[in-house]
Image (cartoon, rainbow, N blue to C red):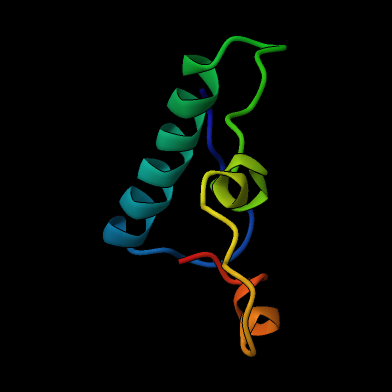
Length: 69
């Protein structure tokens, strides 16, 4: 892997930090095989809401139907 600074004059610490980020990203990309499905985000998982009981009927039920817990 060749890295070339095309503009500016980074300090050795700045260059080391940039190289660490590039290497970490490359290692993370190499760890997951191409075409593998990405893990599903918990926020978009429908079972997050379906796992909870529906609220019992009452005057404030409308406020509890959207927010689980």
